[in-house]
Amino acid sequence: VNDGLQPMYMDLGAVHWMHDSLMECCATNYEWNYEECIGSEPNAPVVINPDTYNKWFPDWLNNDHTCKNDNSQPPYMSKNPSNWMYDTQKECCKERYGYKYNECVGADPNGPNSGKWFRANSGACVQSGDGTNTIDQWKTPYDTEKQCCKAETAITC
Image (cartoon, rainbow, N blue to C red; front, side, top):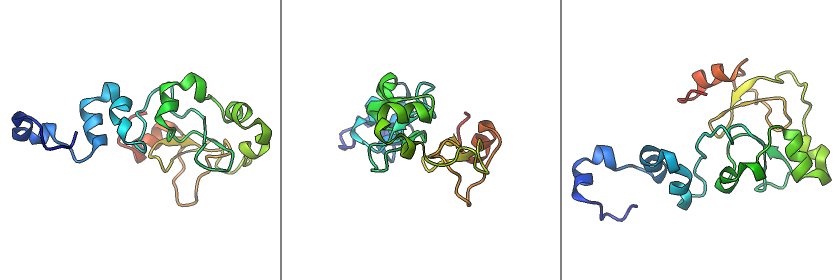
């Protein structure tokens, strides 16, 4: 809440209680229930959860009929991963874009950086070579997810 009506102890201990953003507040104080806490900010990143991390989901926001695994899925998909999240791009494309399957699957999975890990725009490390995750020339490829996380993110994968 950002209404200025916080109790005095929060003002006195502002370094512990007051945050610059809703995301920071939820991540610090409600990590166990982050998605519900952040609910009023629809573009907030999803908390890394083994049931959803790097899983494939239909990208409804674009008209390119693709599935992504960059951890940018909407919260409603994260709350019900068995209905929205898939282990492979092919599964996602088959279920959600069967009518345009070949377009959904996309790029050659045997490209030069196939299987390499890199930092996606969402900040998460994702693996290339699955059609939608291709490494841009300015990004550094890594052989393992752990190498990518250590070099590119503040979290441990």
